Picture 1: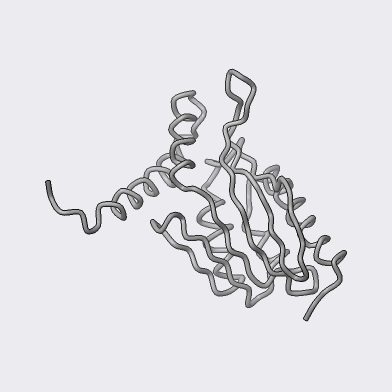
Picture 2: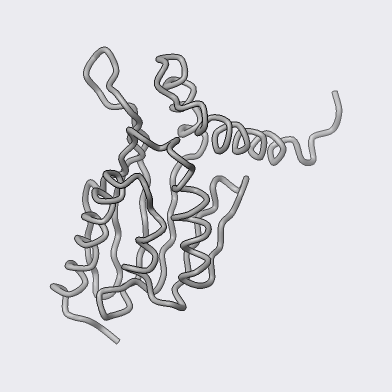
Amino acid sequence: MSYPKEEVEAAIIALRDAFVEAEKRNTWAWIADALYHEDATYFCPYGGAMPVFARSRDEIRATHYGRDMDVGSGWTGWSFPIISFAVNGDQIFSRWVNRGPGKRADGSYYETEGVSFITYGGSGKFSSQYDLFDIGHQMKLCDELKEAGLLNEALERDWVAPMKRRIIDSLNQGIPPA
């Protein structure tokens, strides 16, 4: 079923606004209930190191907006603004950034880019989402933030270090010993 363009655009604008609200609250899990259908799906490959495939709103809340976004207060100071979006029928393409706290000496943000491919499912909610971003660049960004004294210790311990271990383990598979 195809929905009016204005309705689809209103949904992605609501998601963009929800991200701003979540940054203020420093909690993200509520977004799943507000903007995803009960049977919605979500996929993010995390560079193959920790693919997340959620098959329901409950799983989206527990994984993407829960475990991966609600890492205690570790994300304090981070924002995830949706920079732009395009609508084609019920399909939405959004471009966003993972923006760390503070700014570099040159005034630029500490950030990496990502994209989402989202399907609108009516009633102001999404039926599917597929996220892509460069996890290697994200880890390098976190190293840069740590060097600048801006990486939260809980985030480093609970998300960055485990992700780096997964990436290294994934890359080491199939490599013969030296």
